[in-house]
Length: 401
Ligand SMILES: *[C@@H]1O[C@H](CO)[C@@H](O)[C@H](O)[C@H]1NC(C)=O
Ligand SMILES: *[C@@H]1O[C@H](CO)[C@@H](O)[C@H](O)[C@H]1NC(C)=O
Image (tube, rainbow, N blue to C red; front, side, top):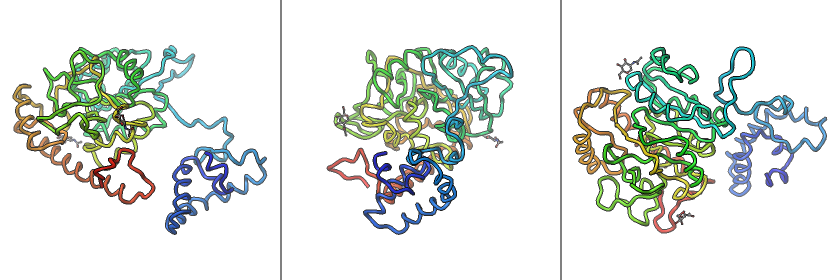
């Protein structure tokens, strides 16, 4: 903002969405003198000359204004910048007023096979403070109608699409700006020991921007030590894992998944962290493998402190291959065994239990691994090419790149 007021007239008329990138670009152009960057910004400006001529007649006090891109020809008071998922009756007064406390959003990708379990999960969220949004990946919507909360939930149906596909398309940060916390959960979670109200008060108190409930290690498969519930604890932010399985983590480890990391089956985002995380989700990758390792960049500061696992409200993770595969009928113990072997041979990856998987499951797994590699490479390329970006978590000693 300070930069802006000292800028030229042209800079001032830039749209809000271009503001930060363009200020940075101009800044970079100034020092690096890259012709390409300058062109990019100029092109953007051309379209604004029309607006510029409008503005000539305006009092000078208006020149510093920032308006959302596209809204410049509208009076400010009519511009509704964000939205929400509230439903409205066709006539009469609005639905019974939701409570004053901040709202949260529970968004889950679901299939009818998990109906009972999903019902249990939804019931853990207080009706007055939460909006429920279900993504039906099996195309079945009507069979949910008998559940008491179904008519007040939002149902979106798109066959065979993953949670990440839905989230990228339907949870744009401007659409969900009203929700203080976003639960982007899988359907195969046991919630006997979870209460959303208590969970929220803990993450608020602890200042967790990105969090997840711990996973009960006695009855669930654990992929990374960090997510395992620590009995008697309220919250933990790092795990020590000297012997494995999975990636080794020591007291002073500074990287995911030792600290600053949650797993993708039950993440909870603050409004601000979601606004950032939404950008990391790539449109063309369906399983989003690898995204979890970069989420710390959305922690609104130090990922070691702002990302954490809540132990006192915890989940069971059933680990059902619910989308794109057959049900896994192995006992959890057997699952655990294969998982352990697997994570030894496959360190550091978000592992799925492997039985004799169906072709579909095999294909999903293969796709996930391919995407993981491509995502990692895309990140590396982005880091290489963005000369303005500084890695806030860069280690002074062992430089990463
Ligand atoms: C982040 O927080 C941890 C734990 O409080 C601290 O040890 C570390 O130095 C902090 N890192 C930065 C970059 O501030
Ligand atoms: C969805 O995926 C299943 C396999 O998991 C497949 O049998 C089915 O044909 C797919 N449906 C569509 C519409 O692509």
